[in-house]
Length: 432
Image 1 (cartoon, rainbow, N blue to C red):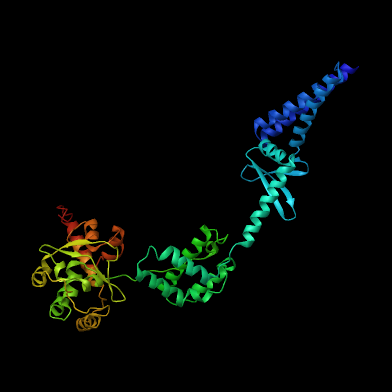
Image 2 (tube, rainbow, N blue to C red):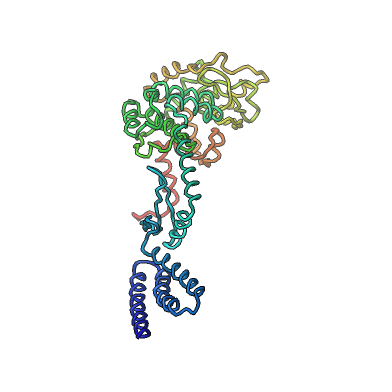
């Protein structure tokens, strides 16, 4: 009778195992299904062997093995010691252990069994639980004792640590100006209390598109440095909409306008500055800081520039470059060349030639700022077919994209000449 019951139980377990395998093949991995099949199949065999064991020691051994199977079967019920094991949307498994009030520890695993084993290893060892609790408490204490910065305090630290060692003095002064007039409005707010809404309101209150863009760049960099240095945990700029800004297009003088301009400017007091910008491509500050000895036989050495504080410093990119002397400037170069270290324009400052240049433009009835002369040089180089990389070297651009994006202007006459050049490649006349 006992044998018949045992056989029937084994058939029932066999049927249940097949059902588990089928369900797991649909929902989980085949490997996990096979593990369940093994559990269900081995349990009746262990029960039978335990009942017929000849000695007490053998019965205890079999009972221990049976208990191990029970533990694994409990794991398949997706919990251990009351801690539930769940499956995430990304396919991983996790369990959350409550260490203390409002203090938790998460356990993860790529498979269910892996997560279960890790969870069991923690819950079965009280020392491990105590160590986790202590570690969490130390982290919370460290976070609570961390220094809180206001926007103003962090700005001072950011400027001193990140900007001053790498930026030119003129750039630092511009950053300070942007902060003083715009960002300082939120100076008293703590960084960890600064919200995306408050930042968006700050930018909305800035009238100039250009200054709004500069304030956005500076404040975003400040907050980014605070996040990566773990001064604050969350970056509010994730929900801030960047202000739109379209730089004003810099135009170049047409060939006829260049001739009319130079016809008047060649007799002006500051004709040297205009010629250096229009015919040699120098920046305004570089032209005002040039010395007689910088003009060599076949080239000009550009090593210094006049900054916005009327001080002589390095060029914008901090490099020294040689610019060939081109034909329109050669006669003027011969007259200015000498071994003297005196400046071509004595006592020049950032306002030098500005008024005179505006008067010339008014006489011509056209509107171009002085920097348009340097843009005109770049456009003339493009007209002549000079490759952009060479033009960038002459103009002192660190990146060729600057030359292509901001300096080469496609004027109406330039486009017409390009169309004509394209048309000359075809000898076929479709009308004949």
